[in-house]
Length: 359
Image (cartoon, rainbow, N blue to C red; front, top):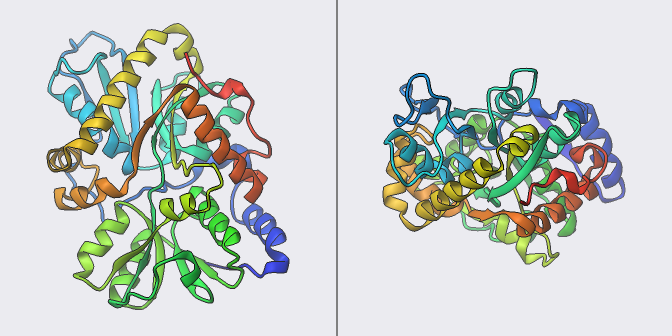
């Protein structure tokens, strides 16, 4: 567990030295834990991989896809279910993996014999992976915006805006990854230099919220959703950090995850990348428009522990599909914010345009 205090006159130094002392060098950010891990374990029968039944045993899938469990997996649920059920709705044939963390995805995208062609990763991991592989991956889409929430325990209703966190201790999951940088930015921009942040595992935070041992915490969905439902009214969502980000009117968007492709695969098969993007966009549209049915798909794939949790989490995931120049504008602005918080979070420098696939 890590305690961090942010006094105003030491803010810049604390951000630099705290982060560099407690996380690996930029080239190793791929080992970061998933920012989207659920508060409770998924069922033991979770299918972690699948292949479209339309493919013959000796046939190579069009796309080897990996999604990160959590909101990015939620958005892809219809695509994955269509692959399982040989649906003509999918333009491509898929072999897919549902990964529990960014490190698994990074390992599958790199090396002499990569396992994946396309994968969803944390947005800062996408940039660090681009740097680490010397342009070996490119960003092709954004599928989820902000997924972070401040929760309040004890049945209280005292916290309703960032200003209400003044002088408080906030427990947070996601040290050394997007969640930490997002929280630091929002505290800084709201002048909250007297907030103490305690980094801990999401499951530990959830248990302490439910018991009333801690007053407030930051968690991603569906972990936040699960904690609220399990608390039976003792824990509430106090602040949607996507809304808090937007209220700053900085012109940037909160981008938590990115979809990346191996550059060589994109060069060899641009039509497959385009086909995937069409399938992924359709999947996100379906999930946003058919929450009840999509919740069943999400739970059936093992992406969340249950359909009720998925049903509550879907509206809080801020699922959105951005590609092309809309994607470039959104995520490049977000990277600029990360750089202002800690240059190491984006590998020490902002990316060149080669990181984006916009064909």
